[in-house]
Amino acid sequence: MSPATSRIELPSPAPGTRRTLLVHRYGTPGARPKAYFQAAIHADEIPGLLVAQHLLCGLEQAHAAGRILGEVVVAPVANPIGLSQHLNGRLLGRFDHESTGNFNRGFPDLTAGALERLQGKLSADPVTNVALIRATLRAVLAERRAARETEALKLALLDLAIDADYVFDLHCDGEALLHLYASRWQADDALALGAELGAAAILLEEEPGGDPFDEACASPWWKLRAALADEGPVPLAGFAATVELRGQADVNDDYAVTDAAALLRFLQRRGVVAGEPGPLPEPRCEPTPLDGVDVLTAPAAGVLVYRKRLGERVAAGEVVAELVDPLGEPVGAARTPLRSATDGLLFARMTERLARPGQKFCKVAGRKPLSHRQAGKLLED
Ligand SMILES: [Zn+2]
Image (tube, rainbow, N blue to C red; front, side):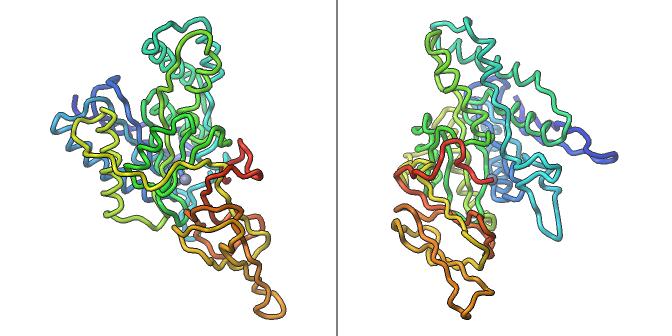
């Protein structure tokens, strides 16, 4: 089967304007395992766009050598809507200017619709159940309709991924070390992926809140497993991870070649692509809970002056940054120390250096869940 390229048309948002979603497919449709990649659903997160290009080159080579065993689907530009949002010379791709909110929130949870149809249908055979659940999730999704362009984009992306064995959503943070978000139900896969990529933090959650893309893909499996526990075995057949490819300015071929090679080795280890990946690198970190990440928040407006660099370990109570009030009196005295609530690794900081009141400006990954972090509200806006 030769690689195929298709274009999914999104609804025209205005007369004379129409955007399309480009999709590359490798391997035989329906072959297993299936992997799905998408880059820059937050459209101002450019590292994934370059990693996807190197990944596609690797997949072309694998195809030419007959080494695609399963199926690989790649949306190299997951958000053409966000990429068009330019204002005063800046790309603003995190929130939809059409007011549907954060582009990586509000993906539909297909669990309830699938559960209705699956009750009384499972068998004792997990393989048959997986195929039935995948078909059911696809059927439930196919009945959804979206008038708005962004909602149609979300359904189209989910449709490409919902039946995949492995889903990789490529993002980045403001300034950051490479890190991952995944479910605690899939800690082993997350640890293996993190080791492959050299992740500095692997953040596991049960309920992040906000319905991001990775959760929409993977969570029906553990939710259905719990709901149908008396009816038959339900393996967790869809792993999904949000891969944060460092910071917004970390766009270069050295990083992208390395990251794409790591993703291809993960596919080799999982039998999606043939080849010898070599030994799995030692993980750089233990997985830590997402509710153990202290997200430091500015209490007031001011100039942010960091006292800690990315990659530094900080102790609970230690000053990570100071907030300087440029209108404060006496001159130079109005500095507010901002402290970490946990022992951990400073792995992400925002790009701007002027904080607004309530703005979340950096993240420290600790081992212990923090009482002020609440399940269902673990992601920033
Ligand atoms: Zn993002």
